[in-house]
Image (tube, rainbow, N blue to C red; front, side, top):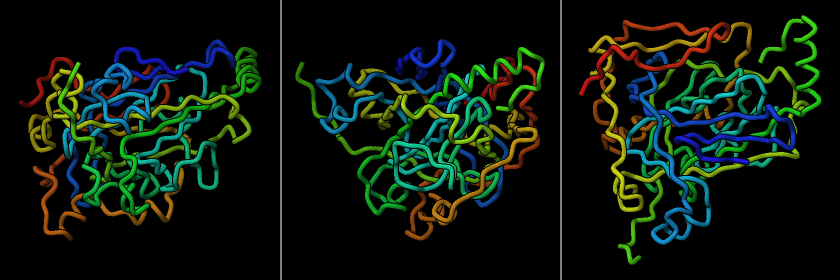
Length: 337
């Protein structure tokens, strides 16, 4: 069961176990330069608003309404990252953009695969910022209109059919979770883990932006740990700012500061260390994708404003063990703009 709570998708499986709960949110962030350099993790600047598609059925394009799920606004060339929250109950979560897996580049499938691994393991994986293009390296999620050849969907399938984001979550089998909890209770080392004007129905998709250092961790539990009889799936349609205002009557969040403005203000970036967890390897499909800047240069276009390299001097190291740490700008610091 998926519910929308305070702009977060909360996923529960009470029929599996009373503790089987996780939450997923989509964080606004600055777009890192798409210049071939590897950057640290950028901060979270608050959740993107999410709205039920069905709440706007009278205004919604037919294909968007048919998909169901939720609606999220993004400006063109805006960046985002996905935050996962699971206190202790493990989950396997697949993330796709335009029905192309963000970890492998394979087309969407309603089951888990380990060769290559096409899912993230919670709570080991706290965040996902982009497409896994090399071991320990992702290319940032950047919003671009479908139909211009920038999105991963278009690059790998040759079509601009879906756009948006898709996710599906599987809980750990109850018996495996109970065995794990029993080990911890016994003192054993824990396992690691009206009539309206019609709107333009052209969808927004996600394209690969700049490179950043982020590991996607291997599944140490094994494929058999996941209860694939129970799953919750959601489609997240991305609306541009005009579509969002037309549908909801709300203004979308303002765009984040540029990377140069952020770095010049001395605000923090982040590195995350997963301890002894092993990062999954990249795949041939995602290794071969081109970034937005690369496609733009080949087409004689400049799709990314404010794309100059920046010097990063303030990096906060976050570690897996210990108190829960979040990627956010300290409250006593003022953002540019």
